[in-house]
Length: 276
Image (tube, rainbow, N blue to C red):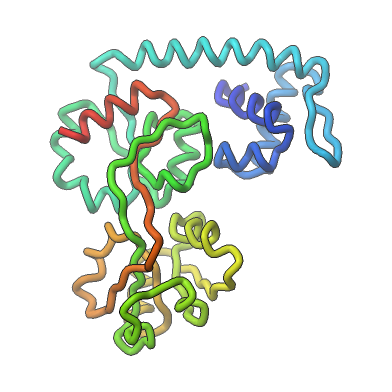
């Protein structure tokens, strides 16, 4: 059994719901169900019984829960102690936008401080890697996670920007709101995508015409060809400035980018290095 599945088991037991626990853990419900099955197979016992009202612990499940909570507490304490070793390399996952925005000026300092870097296309993939123990801390969209087991620290806030061709009717508006985008074809990266998650979270009741592309270059080329518009974080604007396109803020919407980790001590150490 993967040691990370202990956290999954505890969350399902606490919330008595695979769907709710999967959202907090930032993994899919089928993937979480498979992990819970793996825990049950390890203990050779049914730890939950399933009903239409939710998923509940059996007698054996209650016994396992009490024991694994103690085990998890001991592991977390041990990890916090070992991570205080100044020679340990911190494995950091980054968003490409942070890489472009900050990486160039931080690169030498980070390497000198024994930090290894892994760049992923969106926060969801970074959170999955963090949860699986592949990395120690991520720099991603803090607003993309609702997991209350995670520690976070804001590094910067940035606006979402609307990018469109000069022929678009959006040019007539000094201030662009979500309501202005209803009749527009909005080009986004294939899911999972931070901007898509943002749209789904904030505009779930508004019908948007969304089309997905494999990379940002394809999206911008299509916008340039007057085949749609796009929404990107402000830190990616440098990719657009030379393309003779119009850029406006999406009013009343921004995100917080920062450090996210399960271990508070590692987060503090990474923050200290980045703040130098």
